[in-house]
Image (cartoon, rainbow, N blue to C red):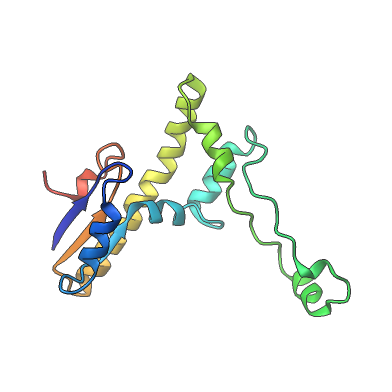
Length: 161
């Protein structure tokens, strides 16, 4: 299977090229590293749990506030019964707060960014590998890897030089 890497910084046309390659006559599957980076830190995932475990003590607003729900209305018996027997859903990461925690040039920010990358990058690589195998088993002759930080994140290991 041919692995095609699509990389570049902001506003370089990656999305346009991905769209073209995903449609006929090419109809190639696109594996979007940015999308996977979000998925691997969704509530309940290992990445989410590791981030919360490491950063929650130093980042009080790490998680978004719980959403307002109609179940707080005492007249809404169905929602109240459901919420009483189930655990509260996990709160999503506050990406802005996490960004403030890891971006900057101070030694502490650099250390925290390396820690975050050590959680996210392996999870993204594993998710990409699973998708590559999936598309291979479906019989696709090629897959496009849309990876903005191809070299910075070490994901160039998937593609030939």
